[in-house]
Length: 516
Image (cartoon, rainbow, N blue to C red; front, side):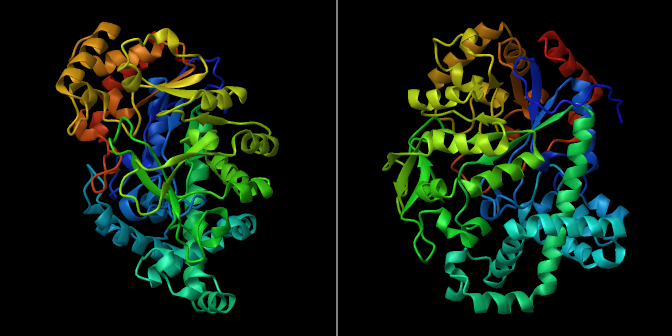
C-alpha cells in the first residue's frame, strides 16, 4: 500500500483544481467474475493516489435486474450483492475456497452476467447461512444495529420483494398473484412466516455489502480520495421501491403506468430514448415534504461524498410519453418540482452536495434552476467539440468537465468513428480536424491530448473514464444507450495500469495544475 499523508477532506470545493476518474466497481480486475468492493478496490484507491487523482466517480450501486443496467436497479436503497468481495468471505470462514471455485471459471476480461448471477447468489446464500455460527460477536452486534437503523425504512420490503420475485419466476411484480401485487396483509404475513430464514439471509447479505462498503469508504477518505456517486432520477417499475410504495408514482391499481419517462430525439438516438420508467406523482411528494426523496439522498450520501443527479433537467420539466409507444418521439414536457424539491432537500441535509447532470436538451429555465442553487453542472468535450463555435473559455469553474461519460464511446473510439455512429463520414472528419486543432496533438496521442486539454480548462473538477486514461478504443465501450445485451460488461486488466502508465497520468495531472 502507498503511504498517504494528505489530510482527510471530503468536500468538493470547486476553487481547488482537481482531477478524477470514472470507473464502475464491476470493471475492476479480479478472480471471481466481476469487480468487487474489496482488495482490488482498495488497490485502485492507492493507484489513484499515485496518479494524483482525487475523485472516484462510480455508477449506481443498487442490485441490477433485467438488462444488468445499474440505472434500473431492483432497489435504490439496497446494495448490489454481486459486488461483494469473495476473498473477504473466505478469509472470515463464511465461504470455503472450494465453494467459490465456480466463480473462478468465469471470464476475467468481461462480466458474463448470465453465468455470474446464479453462481454468486448461491455462494452468498451459503455465507449468510453460516453467519450465525461463524461471525464474530462484534460483527453480529453490528448486524443488529444495521437492522435497527434500516429495517423499517427499506430492508424488509426489499427482502420480501426479492423472495416474491423469485417465487413468481422473476416476473415483474405487476404480473404476480393479485394478493401480492396489492400487498394484502394476510397473504404477506403468511409468506413472511413461511420464509423467515430466507428473509434473514437476504438481510445478512445486505449487511455484508454495507460493511464492506463502509471499510472502502473509510479507506478512501484516509487517503484523501473523494467518492462521487450517481443517482438515477427515476426508479424502475420492477423494483421494491415501486412495489412497496406505489403512491410515489403515476401508476394504476394493477401497477401499470399510463405514461412513462424518456427524452426526445438526441445525440444518441434519432427516435429519442424510451426509458419506460414510471413517472413520479410529484404532487404526492410535495405533500409529504419530499420525505422519500430525502431518505433516498441520505442513503446515497452515506455511500458517497457528492452525488450526481442523472437527468437533472427532469426536476425542472420532464418528458412524458404515453405508455405503449415504441419510440420517445410522441411525448410532452410537463413541469417538475424544481425549487420546492431543492429547498426541501437543502433544509433537510443542511446543504446540496450534488452535481447536476445537465446534458441534452437544456433550456434557460433548467440553467436558471441549477445556478439559483449554485449546483455544478457538467461539460462533455465529446459533445462540445462538435460545436464549431466552442472555445475552452466557455467552460466555467463551477462544473465537472469530462472527456466522455459512461454512455459515450471511449474518446479514441469516438475520434476514429464509433461502430454504428450516427455521424456522417464528413462529420467525423470535421470532428477529427477540430480535435487536432484544439489540442495541437496527433491522431495517435489524442486521448492523452484531450485529457490534458480538459485539465487546462477552468473547470474545478475534470473527470475522464479510465478507458480514456488508458487510450483504449471502442472495444472498451461500457454502454451504448438504447441497446440491451452487450453493455456493462467491460473490465480492465491489471497489466493495463502499469507503473509507467500511472506515472504518466500523474505527470499529466501535475502539468495541468490539479495535483493538490
